[in-house]
Length: 89
Image (cartoon, rainbow, N blue to C red; front, side, top):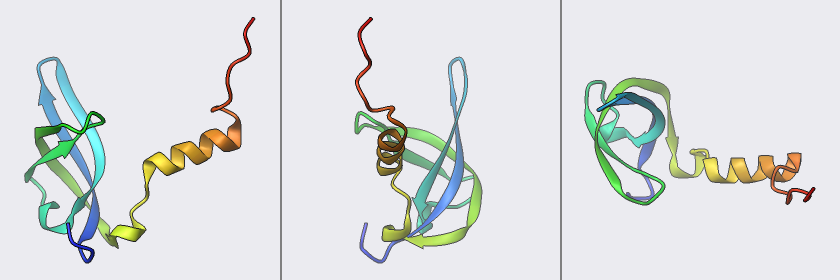
């Protein structure tokens, strides 16, 4: 994506054999269309097709404004001590 790509937070769902998966993600504005089908990249860096855009948010953000969940989780762990090693019993 180019630097001037705008992003919109969307609610997504995907049907699987044993139920339905739901996710929230920031999509490039061109893909943020209700009823659209998109591919998402997972934690293993693999693409999964079949995510249906259920809802599209109102705010449009630039790349620098999109929250980084990894940074937020890391900061939370450092603030709360969750990242500290557990004491052995």
